[in-house]
Length: 282
Image (tube, rainbow, N blue to C red; front, side):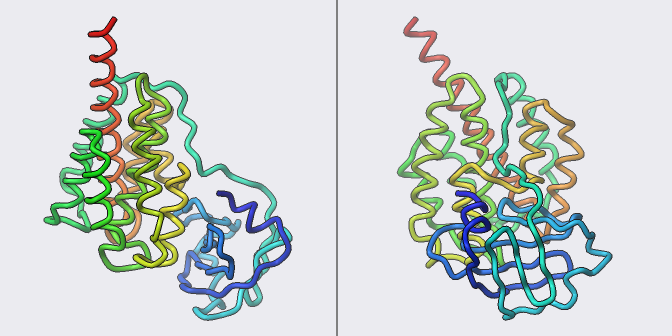
């Protein structure tokens, strides 16, 4: 799934479903994902379905746009009211990590745990996120799907907490499962769990959250999530990336970080189990 499929063909109509000082969300009249396109300022959270404009939110470039307005995307352009954005460059929302040692992943898990000790989690006290994390670490697909389906759409807002957890979990399973030794089980889990939570997401959560779940199932994440994954892989400092992620939204940053931690733990546990089995059979 790619924004090119929406932005390169002839123009498609849509409408503004939410308008904020730093971001617009446009629901396009198309059956294919991504159905929601984000237009964000340079200092806003960069979701994987984002077109980023050069101006910052202090310049108020989106001030004249209101919810319900008509929008168009295609022919390399996004048009809403007086706003006309031409796509000049493309960015890749799929994290590329290269090989990650299990010792490095272990260290990253510990840093994530410490950073989340006092974080404000949107589903605090709800058992299913923790159950989902445990089932993934056990490689229990049926149990993971049952827990995941109970938290799709759970929570208020444009991106409910349950969907943030699921999106980050899926991306971590895919990105790190493809980077560590013996990560095949994590990739298998990402494939099937992603298929399960996106099968009817459009009827169970918001349009934006459904698009982000489809992005995550394809291994695509926000720039802030990618930075944390790169920090876990040792490609950039982890602490500043975690601070930026945890500052996102009311609880969205913490919800995403919880999903990343669940995914990292699952990849680590599944890979160590596979490594022990490989050594035992050698």
